[in-house]
Image (cartoon, rainbow, N blue to C red):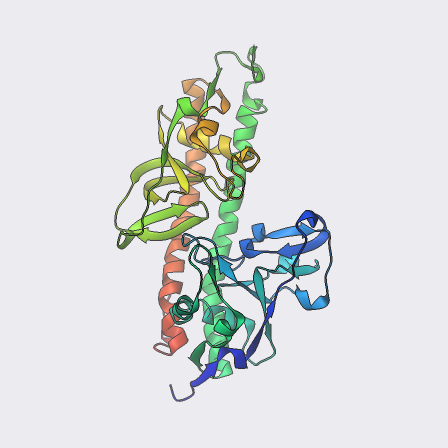
Amino acid sequence: MSEWKEYRLGDIITIKSGFAYKGDMIGHGENVLLGMGCVSFKERFLLSGARAYAGDCADRYCANSGDIVLATRQQSDNLPILGMPAIIPSELSEKRIIIGANLYRVDNESDFSNEYIYWLLKTPLYVNHIRSCQSGTTVRMITKANIEDFRFKAPGREERNRISCFLKTLDDKIEVNRRINDNLEQQAQALFKSWFVDFEPFRNQPFTESELGMIPEGWSVGTVGELIEIKYGKDHKKMLDGEIPVYGSGGLMRRCERALYNGESVLIPRKGTLNNVMYVNGAFWTVDTMFYSVPKIANVILFTYLFLCSKDLASMNSGSAVPSMTTEILNNMQIVVPTEGVMADFNTKVRSIYSQIRHGNEESGRLASLRDTLLPRLMSGEIKVEDVTL
């Protein structure tokens, strides 16, 4: 620890405010506007938070790939992103990137790499500092001064680079798994479209008229509510930590001691990001911003999940300030229902795909757990990179 020195964050970086953008220009144009949606408490950057923007701004509100942005506020404790960092990815390097007013941009001209600063801002020490400074009840907020006043110890540049490189290696392995799983997910959705939208495997058999158009003979038109029972999630805050994943509309939130349900289920956002439908198979808990489902007939969960993924649930929003979904909307959605035999055959095919996805997710989970365990120990000097065996 002899090489380690104490620093004040504001002495090595500067925090800059974002741009007060015009809402009517979002969704158009060639520029990219970054908002809080690009920040995650568990991922490096969410591209879903980068939106097209038709307006422009002064250069001081722009950023480049590799720059760090921070969330200035947090609208729900279910998504703990206050003060959390995101690194702008290379996918946006050809775009003019505008930092929105609900983000801070980190300007760094020190010999601390952005990669090291990113990991520093993921440590429990920093997270606890932010929580001690935050203001507001419904909406949590943080100031530039709060962030800049964070104090920490760090080693020399060479050791800092070894630490950040090691942690990024783990992140890169997780990213490879994510891309493989994204490809497998696309394969499953393409298979659903081939069978139940284009009817490609059934074109040589008789078709019949229905309220949803021509469908294979023997099939029917039903509703989602006839296939699955949609149930409300519940509060989780009083439960102790454990092994059971807790899901909200933004994804995995934490792990708790007890399961709300154990089995195959489609998870459907009730508030927030309505298109973030998820398939799970095992014990889980969902919070009150997320519906879960129980099958009413055999082999139906993956079929229903892929059907809902093919729909724009966000366009069915029943809310005003906060996007909302209701059981009535979901239960009454019409769906083409195949015969039991076709449903079983399809389930067998896609189940093998989701078994591969589950394997990838489990490996990524182990890597993320290892990364999160090592992070505070490496960043405090308790252990060195060369002492870690993967």
